[in-house]
Length: 188
Image 1 (tube, rainbow, N blue to C red):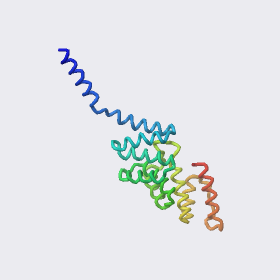
Image 2: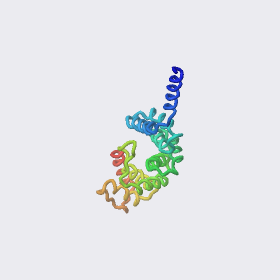
Image 3: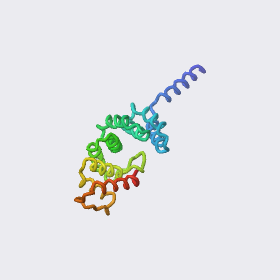
Image 4: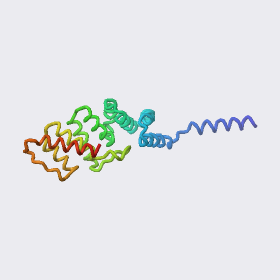
């Protein structure tokens, strides 16, 4: 009888520990997000990378944002591109940053457009300090880099409606560059 009870207890313990736990998945993503929000990007990266196999693009995008915070834009770009098919706004927002950092202004503009079309008031789920204004600034900067001063000024006006330079002024590029520098200091 004691032997049967022991077998029953052992079987029950093994069965319970082997059952899937749906809350474990959520807790792990939540834990990774909280570690990211606490600013420990290396620890958050480890957590997100451990979750990629089970959580896919959501974890990959989290890892990519960790790479951005760790100044590894090339790896972040790779992670964002691997998640592109899932059309996650946080992924495309990050992809905007990596395209801009890689000196690909047209790509940065397109990625930001994707996010802003879906949500004009976008806020990064991992860090509320990153928002639509950052994407608009990147677009303005990218248009400036491409020599499209009209489009650059239009984007700048979304950030500062009082900016209204004469587009025919001989120093228009200097005026835009100075305004982008001031806005960059405010938004970054």
